[in-house]
Amino acid sequence: MIEVLVKNILALAIVLVSFLLPAKIVYADQGNLLKINESWSRATTSSQKTGAVFLKIKNVGMHSDKLIGVEADIANHSSLHQMIHENGVMKMRAIKGGIKVSANSEVILSPGQKHIMLMGLKKRLKENSNIPLTLIFEKSGKINVLAIVLPAGSRGPDHSGISEMEHKKHMIKK
Ligand SMILES: [Cu+2]
Image (cartoon, rainbow, N blue to C red; front, side, top):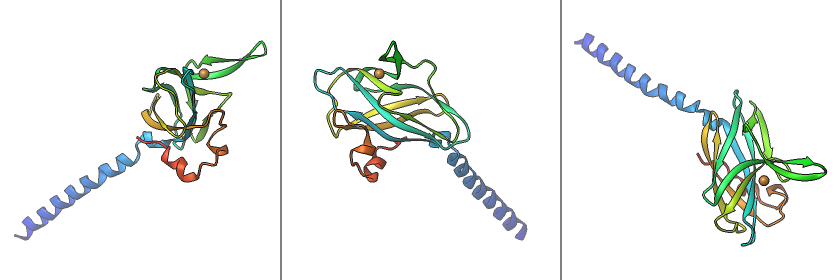
């Protein structure tokens, strides 16, 4: 009788342990190691057919990753761009090979630098609206982001008086 009881307790213990283990595996999800902060864009007029999105990518993990693409329903075509100087003129070029985000570091996409280009806008970017985007990373896969549209000519959330709480609303939504 006692032997049966001990066996039952052992079986129960094994079941409990197996319930506890997967929780730890989920916690180590690579996708959570990339934090997308301060995603923003600038309002456009109805005649403007292109827009740009800027954001910060923080890698709190121990492995590097790479932003290799972007998808946005609001535009016919979205790509990663870089500004370059050519014969004294600033030009935009598509980034080949993606944007590397090293372990434990941050990459900032900002005006005049690297940015996400939205080409063939299907509708104008309205101030205070949100643009849903999907960032595609080599290792972490897809991460959905909402970029807030700031006034035309804005220099970014840091300079527009948007509170820290507003920032958090636009952080990574996986
Ligand atoms: Cu561009």
